[in-house]
Length: 264
Image (cartoon, rainbow, N blue to C red):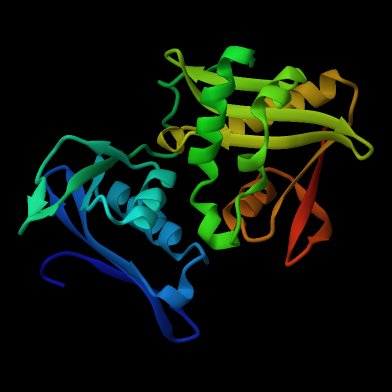
């Protein structure tokens, strides 16, 4: 198209979603995105944003930008879960409708060496920040799975009090959370969460590598975790770094996928 590229998400010949963009200097502006109501909850929006981010990097853009209204709660949660944050840039209204801008600064794979995270045990003073981060990290799954993800229902005062919670900090702000446990099946990653604004810097993998080191130090030769069957991006990440599915366990209308990694 003359105004800029447009992509469609297609399944079995049917268009399920679309996104369009236009170049604005060093930025790629997302001027429109839509997903069919019948296709919501299938990660179509996330996949479209991931694709457009790859396109932007390949064409030398430094940022993705967009404008939205404060009424589109679902869309805002999606953007935030994919690493966008609100900025003060205009416009602030269009024909009387309030608007605000969002941006996502783009980083090439492997370009996280200039961002250093420090890990430390969580304390009681971290309870509120940890709970807020978990809600931010998992909130976009509510529509997809039809319920609150389990990590959003936990009492983090109790969990942190149990002594197996680690936080990752960047410049004094908590950017990631890791909860470990030991159960009858071995060393367990109970929860790993990264603030959306810190995705793409390798922090998630860093937390998983930290968990593996903790498992080895505790004398275990493997580590396991579980995730919801509809959290497909998590399943893909775990598979890429060596986790193998070993069980699926029904929890009513859905299943939890259990995966294990053997440690060398």
